[in-house]
Length: 303
Image 1 (tube, rainbow, N blue to C red):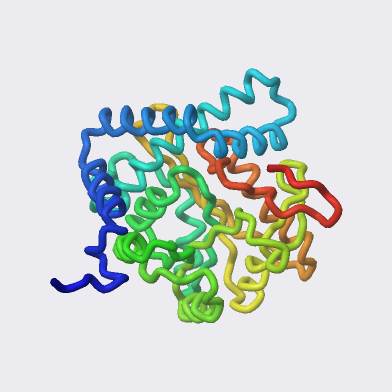
Image 2: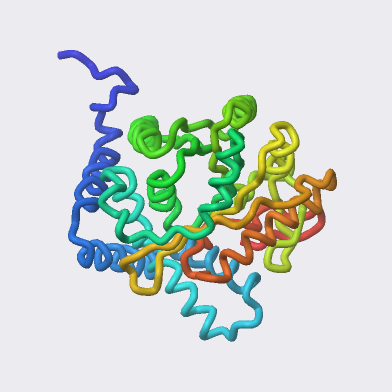
């Protein structure tokens, strides 16, 4: 009897991954109301069972929203899990279906800002944000403007293949986050590149800048890419509307006088833009991420 190659995608180690992919494909085709119900159920189950992630989320919200009393903070934690549960179904929809079927659900504001950039034949650096609607936002954006995407490869090679194929269908090119030359080359050739600078990538890649009043390790690469390419930096905001049936995307005007040459000031400016966007719908942000994992030297860990 033959032996499967150790990395064969038919190997039993990947059976759970195949089940997850199958569930995503099935979830993408659920009727809209059922999709919302399933997403909420997943979010509530995670809120009850994922104690570690609930602690991370509660810590982030306590740090970032000190003006809220404890009861409101707890509600926001619960709402965050629900929004991110729905986000799993939205991601499945983005990866497995043609976004054209959602065009009637989208309002896109500020298109004129990107239209002016494209009229000049220039590529832009699009500042995306890790909302629960991230991948669906990318799919909806593709209905109006083309873009490449910078992403972190998944550790599971089968899921990485599935995810990359899906994103290449939505975006022009999926670029590994470590491939700075690839990002610069695509922008200089006139392509828009979607880039999300709102996660903690460690001390070496970052400077500390305020985020919701808390010193946060903030990646320096945003200003570096803008400096190397001369590309306009375009903040993009996207969220699920309160009716849970429609979505809004909005381009803000390109950042003026960016980069400034001051790494901390530039990082703080990007954080301020992201913070203002999050405050519109704070429950839809990925608070489950350890945003304050890296601390200034001498400060205690927060998680």
